[in-house]
Image (tube, rainbow over all chains, first blue to last red; front, top):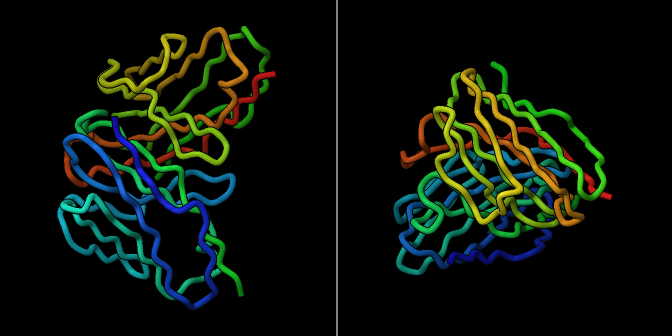
Length: 112
Length: 116
């Protein structure tokens, strides 16, 4: 089967940079996605990495190393509104390309 | 541009009852996936519908079934409810069978199901 590990909680201050790591074990890895979910809200797509390297989208960047089965989400210039849960999710051969397997999520608290 | 909508927003049922949850995909999308999210956990894939057929299924019992209509909307049915079925049920829509490398799933706000 597949498993994903990410820290349960991270705390940072406004304006800082925070990195949320994700390690995974899968069979036939296709890609790693990141989703943000505010309390009571729906998960929203942030980024997707299928190949090694860094993808940048505004203040958010995501990195993937397929050889290390590792990725991270980097949030820069933190704002209070970034307080939310962040999930890494893989698409792999076990669940098929059509499904996402999510980690348990990292709760980010941004303090003033 | 209408996003993914789900109904109802909240639902309370008792053990043994049956429930039907509804989802309308984002405009232009034809594929609907259903996920179960327990409190403090990540969403778990239940199944996915495309062209009115179940295309893939996660590790959920047959008590969980679904349907997709010609207008791409979908229903999730759960029979013989258990206390452990209490969760947020999320619907996600996408275009096509999600085999492209940049597939993005758009999630609805979810239905909060409480089983007493």
